[in-house]
Image (tube, rainbow, N blue to C red; front, side, top):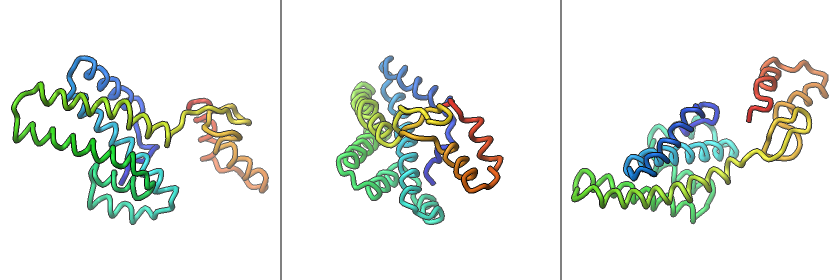
Amino acid sequence: MPIKWDKINWEATKEIMDLAVLLFRKGEYLGALVIEMLILEGTLSLVVGNLLTKKHVVDEEASEYWEKYPNFYTLINYYYLLTQEKPTYEKLKDINNRRNKIIHKLFFEFTSLSNLQKEAQSICEDIIVDLNKNLQEKYFPKKKYKCENCGRLISHRGKCLPCNVIAKYKREGKEVPQYWLNFYKNSTNQF
């Protein structure tokens, strides 16, 4: 099943991203490529999981398919089926094919490390500069607005989800579940 947003260890993810940048700057492009592909796959998994939820795909159906075909290629196809974005789909396929060629050369047609490093550098640049950044900006926009009620940073005008849910319970004269009160208390101004 694609990665769920709430299951990510953001501190570890930041450290891994920093390591990829460090390796890239040192000229260790194969190492950077491995990490960047993991980050790209994680980002794409988040996007696909988010899109599946928005399209109301039943979790059991998605899980069953995911368990049969758990790989980057499957994510690429899921992404295209859900978005119909041909340019991004083509870039993802191209990067996947180029990565596979490097792996094939590494184990079956190895001639020199410098050739592989150049190819890995090219892929890393495409991933870092283009795909990861664009996917993250498009599907996980930066928080630009403040909630009208609590001041928490959000990506839209109005109120944040906890404030809206709490207001709805109060309007209906119902007791607000402790979950939402805790969520509100723990998440205010932390994004």
